[in-house]
Amino acid sequence: MEITEKDVEHIAELARLELAAEEKKLYTGQLKSIFGWMEELNKADTASVPPTSNVLGAANPLREDKPFYFEDREAILKNAPGREYDFIKVKKVIE
Amino acid sequence: MPEFEPVIGLEVHTQLKTETKMFCSCKTSASEAPANAFICPVCTGQPGALPTPNLRAVRLGAAAGLALGCEVSEVSVFARKNYFYPDNPKAYQISQFDKPLCENGAVELDLKDAAGGVRTKTVRVHRAHLEEDAGKSLHAIGSRQLDHTLVDFNRCGVPLLEIVSEPDLNSADEAYAYLMELKKLLQWVGVSNCDMEKGELRCDVNISLRPKGETKLGRKVEIKNLNSFKAVKDAITHEIGRQAAVLNGGGAVDQDTRLWNEKEQKTVSMRSKELAHDYRYFPEPDLSPLRISAAFKEELKKEIGELPKAKKDRFKAEYGLSSYDAGVVTGGKGLSAYFEACMSEVKRSGLAVPAKNVLNLIASEFLARLNGLKKDSVTLDPGDKELISPANLAKTAALTAAGKLSASAAKTVFAKSWETGKDPETLMGELGLAQVSDAGLIKDWAREAIAANPKAAEDFRNGNEKALGPLVGVIMKKSKGTANPAAANAAIKELLK
Image (tube, rainbow over all chains, first blue to last red; front, side, top):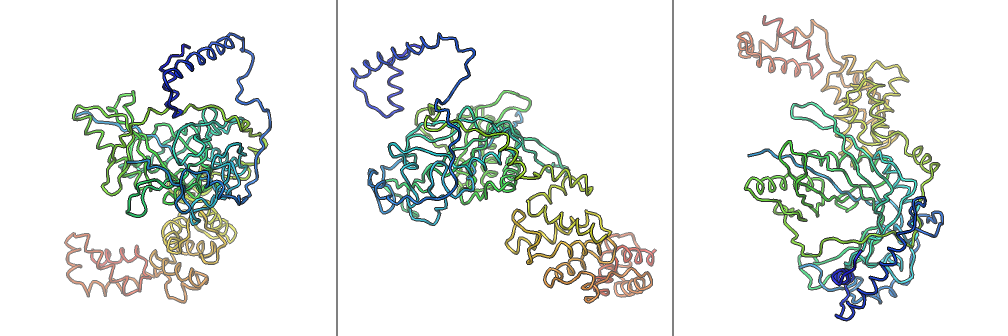
């Protein structure tokens, strides 16, 4: 797969990143070489290997449905960009 | 102008009945709580916080899958759905993508057709997967629009099951019936309360039109913001009309997301200029694949017990009920248990009463009173002392079946037995409501009725069948409703021959 500057612009937009012209060029080159390596990996014969989505191999560490009250919500609210009473305040998101 | 066929698929989100959120131990019951009362580092996406799936949510999701006739996957995988929005603090939602928990289900609908008959339709369920809810954004307080947005994360991370149907629905009525069936099944297995007003069930509609006979799908429109079962029906009806008008005018329907405007009863385009959705799903690296063992599934099946469809088929075979009638008494788990309690009472006391008579009493008098008591067919308990006992309902039905009680007298006895808990036969005697079939006595009443209504008698003699009603009415009045209506009809006809 050929990575172009257009792809980098698209990814940057999805990630809400503003890139300068030279950054775009830099990342295009870096991504190109990463994808080149992926293509190298694609050459490996994996016909007998089942696809995997996880390498932890752990069995389900599931949790009982028991409430636990987290006491330091103030610490969380302090991280928010703004606050109004108990709410987190952000820029208006609809017209 | 060509006739169009609507093609409709529904995406339903149902909130799973858990105490805690999908991936953390924060409480879910937050409707009365102040904003952001139940939040923690996991559900607000603080750096380094790790999710742990809720066992009960997994159980309920799998139970719902079994109720919907799905295959429950041995291995399913959580995935990140990436997008930016203030109500989504991690900038991704944990959902499932290419390996959902449940796949390939089917729901059977009993639909009334135009001729008054009943037809059965199967709607395929494409998939059902687990995911977490987003927070709640507030853009206005009451009628006052805010110049900013307020966010409450109490709901963020609450477990949801998204149920996606195949586009097998072809009308607003079918979509409505499908939703009601989903609600019934989800309530039956105790997965969700499905109260749409409370947001426990949410529905998005995908809809397109195509000329009748065409197999290719038209361009689809998504409708959001549907807050009630009625809104779903109304919005689909409106949208079918709108798309047909566009197509008949020679235009093309735009691929679009529209909102239902309840006040104006129309769908309105969201005109979203955002990028085409590019969620970049990938497997959630913080969670291992979800494994459901065969033993777990078996245990779950046992716990769920007989599903409504199986129960319905059994009622048809065991009691000779029609498909429609069997559908009525399997409308809720509680109601079906009540019906069975009545039938086992019939068996136990050797009452001579067809199931149909028991069913009729349940479908009319019983359900009407049940609603009045603010009880429902899902949660009702056959042993509830506020209800008429299954034994007394069965006995009332038996008296009707034996011709000892007229339909109207049965209502009175039924009501009295419900209020007092007394035996219906005793009440029948006390209230003097035993049905009179004595030919001599009825003939006397018939004579009096004719004498009192010479005009009606004359009309009937001249061939006006409708004049029979008032004459029989007089007999009913004289007999205080105890005369056997068939015998009363016959007596009048005999005298006016």
